[in-house]
Image (cartoon, rainbow, N blue to C red; front, side, top):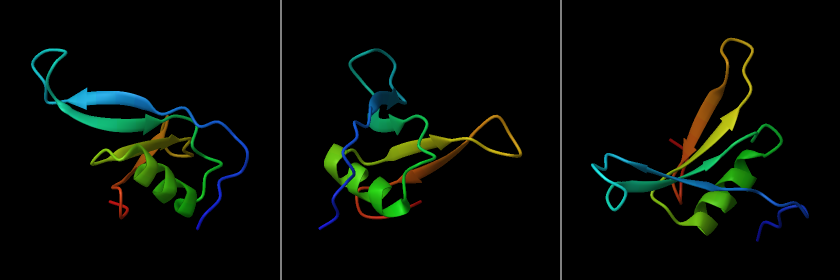
Length: 75
């Protein structure tokens, strides 16, 4: 079992494809995820238990980059 370091990870909720605040597909979003390993991202995705969780990181080529993890795999 993977143990995350003693840190708080803020996961925001984003609903996509909805026409109002009651609809849409929920997804988790973690900002400033540069310090997280792939294993930690997978564990967070499983814990959040949405179909997808996006991890936003810095980039040398753009303003930011993102990786999307499903509860059981990376996209």
